[in-house]
Amino acid sequence: MDNTMHIANSWPIWAFASLIIGVVVFQGIKFLQLARKAGAGIGLSNQEMNKAIKTGAITAIGPSFGIVIVAISLISLLGNPLTMMRIGVIGSAPIESLGASLASESAGAELTGVTFTPEVFTLIVWTLCIGGSGWMLFTLFFNKSLGTVQEKISATPNGKKYLSVIALIAMIAIFGSLTSAEMIKGLVPALTAVAAILSSLLMNLIAEKKKIIWLKEWALGLSIIIALTVTYFII
Image (cartoon, rainbow, N blue to C red):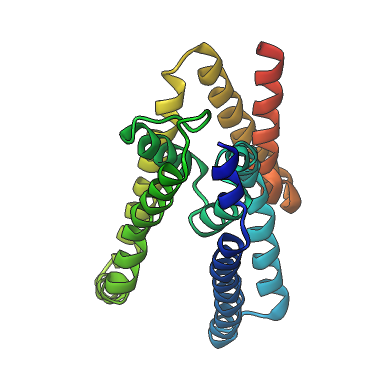
């Protein structure tokens, strides 16, 4: 276990992980520049674009809470650089945890203990990297085609309305599936989810009626904090 963690935190792993994170940071900066250019092209003012960027940044804080908590636990199991690389690229802490567990179990080992050898660690690295490549390759090869399909649908009568409905249905399906999967685990997860849903709906309703813009921006993050508080007192 100690030898494995020494390898997991060695400088070659740090070098490769930092290189990948550097690419992610570059992509983020480049996308932001392209977004500003596109916004100016459709007549958005700098104030409107700054507001959109601020809203996106604030909204990202809430979901990051859960990822940070899981990342801290993964650091003790997989080391600092691999955790940084996987969470920084994929951003899905549950997927990374599941992938690491499945990889170690397939080798008849545990993430903690003497059975966690360098060979098992290597298997986990390959599993996580290959497992996370699917949606990246799909985006690379099919993103342009999907954009063409979107343009053709938008050009039809009521096409934009149909796309909005499809996007709304997809979001409800995804978040509904994830939430319901947690709620069926017991009373505490169910009450936590209900607290998050009700608090988010209430804050958005108040923000809409009272025209409180900042409350709508912070609704997601605050609903997560409220849900965690409720869970703390229940447990």
